[in-house]
Image (cartoon, rainbow, N blue to C red; front, side):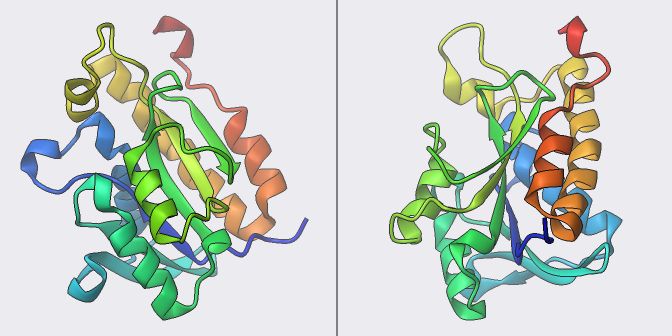
Length: 201
């Protein structure tokens, strides 16, 4: 299968010190790690309501974006950016946290439901209802109680953090594979991943 046509990678999260390192920021944490690894500068673009950069990942040109809106308004950054650079929704990869997966699990998918994720909902709404974009889901697990808001905005325990960081490293390799080799190889590589300490959680 040919390489994918992904032209924009968006990492979701919230801005501000109180959100740094939170479960809900797993998506933007991965984006920042990608930017650091490949030397891509992210600069504030007020017209796009986010931090935006352009560079090469394993020789493939791509734009990176972190919406500096609240998570629930992520589409206000992603959709205008796509419109300006003529990027189709199907050429977008969104990195985000996922409660329906255990900590450190990864799933790459194209299209489908939004699983109640407000950041994804905002993007789909701003795409005129289209949901045909890639998502890389980073597992954070579910709260023991039903306090979802405090759970996602809280910071993972050290053992959970270790699993998530291990997944992040694997995800970066998977994203490079998606860009260079296409979705078939990347799906297999990413979706079969289990962190080394998976059985301990």
